[in-house]
Amino acid sequence: MLKAVRNPLAFIAARWTPSPRTVRRAALASLVMSVAIVITGGAVRLTGSGLGCETWPKCSGDSLVATQEMGVHGLIEFGNRMLTYVVCAAVGWVIIASRAAKPERRGVTRLGWAQFWVVMFNGVLGGLTVLAELNPFLVAGHFLAAIALLTVTTLTWQRVREGDDTPRPLVGVPVRRAVVALTGLAGALMVVGTAVTGTGEHAGDSSDIERMPFDWEWITRVHSLLAWAVVLGTAAVWIALRTMDAPPATLARARDLFVVLMGQGVIGYTQYFLDEPEGLVALHLLGSTLVWIAVLRLLLATRDRGQAPTPGHAPERIKDSAEETPVPA
Image 1 (cartoon, rainbow, N blue to C red):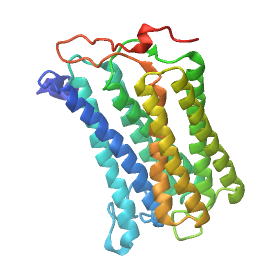
Image 2 (cartoon, one colour):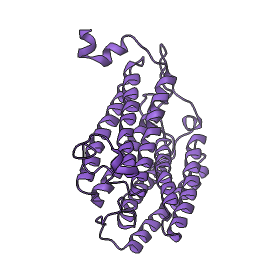
Image 3 (cartoon, rainbow, N blue to C red):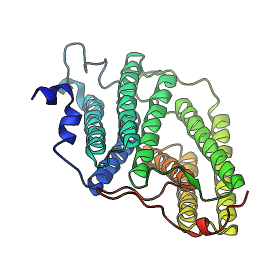
Image 4 (cartoon, rainbow, N blue to C red):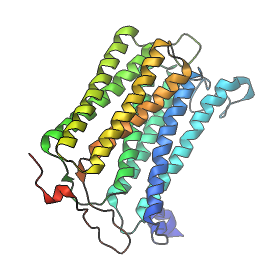
């Protein structure tokens, strides 16, 4: 019992060995929950429930939880806070499963702990956002911290399905650089998207909430130009990959990103011309998470780290056409 108190993870690892499938499910659960917390956070904003709980860490000055007097807005805001505990449970499952796996994969465990600290940071940031009465810059930071969690959970999901070999490039240097640049453009698109929302009409509460000091039409056009840059960059990368006979998995990731971008573009322009109806804004928010996941998957698909290790077996390298022919410079 003393060992369990001193080092509970080591205590569990000595008595339980999860299957690779269990570890993959844990990583997928944390990824799904990182998407869910973004969507429910958007629901809080779109329903005007951002100050449904008027303070933090309590919901009100004299109640830890939402009360009947707070109405539906208090229930929505408090429900989003409670979902954070579900996210923590999913992250905890990743940490425990990766630590108990045999052979132990320290890189995956570190990613699990990175998820934990991002969740803790964003929880505090969310509380400060409420205390600052939905300051739009803090709200934007709260969203970007959620995207940071989405980034780490996506990386974790990828890592549990591959080995620990030194990354081996599957495409040439120019294409790798193009994909890195495309990832940077997509990141800029996400940041500018927070400015569009922070300037627009969905302030998160029915009261007079401060907005970002941008012209909405101008910042929306900047966002649109960045979106087109990402679309054209994706098309260029996809064509380059097809030209150089890249591995099928890498080609598939470029195709997936292009398809998601097309859907996101349709939703974006529709919500613009219809003056940002709440339902379409929520769909656009979901689309932003899918775009970012697709971007990261394409970036990770440009290299190979071999097969994921299994209990009692050393990992083997995956052979493909890229191993048999030199990678162009």
